[in-house]
Length: 399
Ligand code: NAP
Ligand code: MG
Image 1: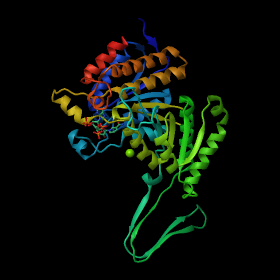
Image 2: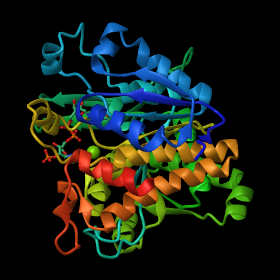
Image 3: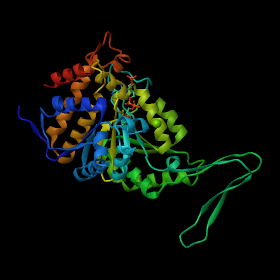
Image 4: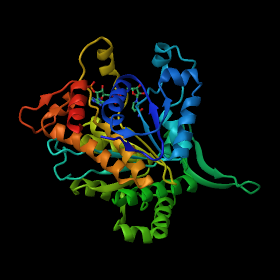
């Protein structure tokens, strides 16, 4: 069989620990035997980031912007322990944070659903994709503890103008806390654009929610910008049969639990932080959650939502058997390959990605799966595969 040609290069970002071990296997067993693809390789292992003073992360993000599609392995975000473990020059920033800010992207998290791994929420039949705005609000706030009496004010001083002051609270004999937070029209607009672009690409109805009944200026600004985007893209939405709905956040939360799923749930930063974990757990396992970063002008970076699975890697290093789920990492590859095929207008490439996904799904639905899924499966007597047996079984099915 001749290999299927991928027209445009794909950016590949290698990573750390157990996911790095899995990564190489996926490439060698599932991808390269079948695809003729030019991979622009960047080694984002923590040691190489250290050696390059993190330049490799910046280069990789820029390559994603240049080529349009990238796929990333999970990476260590160093803390103090990691600095010691690898004798790092410093606690480098989170690579995902760096890539997100260079691509000005929005993160979409999507669960992989399988017939024998039932969601914990019984009404959910189709994946719910959560889009989280990843800039501002409480994540960039200023906070203060008030121990004595006095006024807390919000002051805006326009360049060259007179300050405007709003009284937040006059504390008297109570003490307390206060904070100031912000967002920008530019970032909210980017977020809205990315949401509409993704929903149109995937043909998913859009839900957006805030608490604008209470927050009449701050949350209302988000609602207005989303509405402007919906109005601007009305033609595209109608053509694709995709709808835009606005809810109050508390209404949306209740609706989500009653829904069948199958929609894109766009959330402000804090809501998305909380709700994406609820949705991930509601669907079953972190090993079944993929993530894609989308820039406002339609550049894509795919990855698994989980980390480097350090606990399993320690066992692997000691020569012990592991049963690490590779599904989200495989789907990161197939997501990137399918998107590349779609952008290049090469249906054979898209179809290949679908065949790999089918092989994964058929393997698990056939009763062979890693330990995390065995615990959730409705298959009578499921067979537990170790990390490599699972990949071998998928490769055999694909061949
Ligand atoms: P983690 O790697 O997601 O693993 C946490 C636990 O979740 C694992 O110990 C395992 O539980 C379970 N798990 C996660 N993925 C699994 C899979 N594919 N198959 C089976 N079980 C899975 O999170 P962490 O241990 O908090 O973080 C480890 C490292 O990853 C850290 O250095 C962190 O900085 C990094 N990280 C990177 C990313 C990213 O690159 N996107 C995201 C998060 C964390 P059991 O041990 O109970 O089996
Ligand atoms: Mg969270």
